[in-house]
Image 1: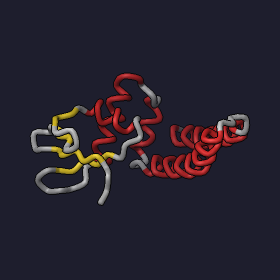
Image 2: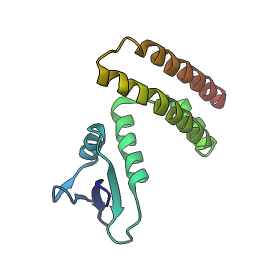
Image 3: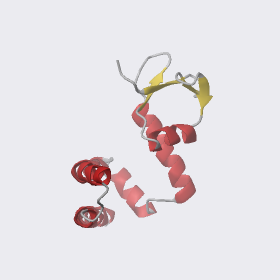
Image 4: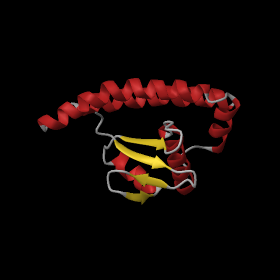
Length: 138
């Protein structure tokens, strides 16, 4: 059985955390995720998995507060029906999976001197992604 924190979404859009037996906000769900918890959001009536939709709402809230994506980038993503977003997410997942696991091992050993190469790898990947996004914006 999964140890994911299950949050039920009701028809009135309220979110109910089954672990703590109380209603929660999108900000609290973001906090669970930042703390490293596995969170699943399930429609109470249909039992559909609404996790990705709810996390998109969390990101939208972050965008409202901090503005982390340039307007032209968002327009480009919409114009390409999100295809480029899937490509970018795939590249980030590949990079973070490989580099992130190594970083975790390094931190466990207490030796952070080897992380410079990992940071450079991430920076190079990010630069490539930024080039692709710039192309999409044109």
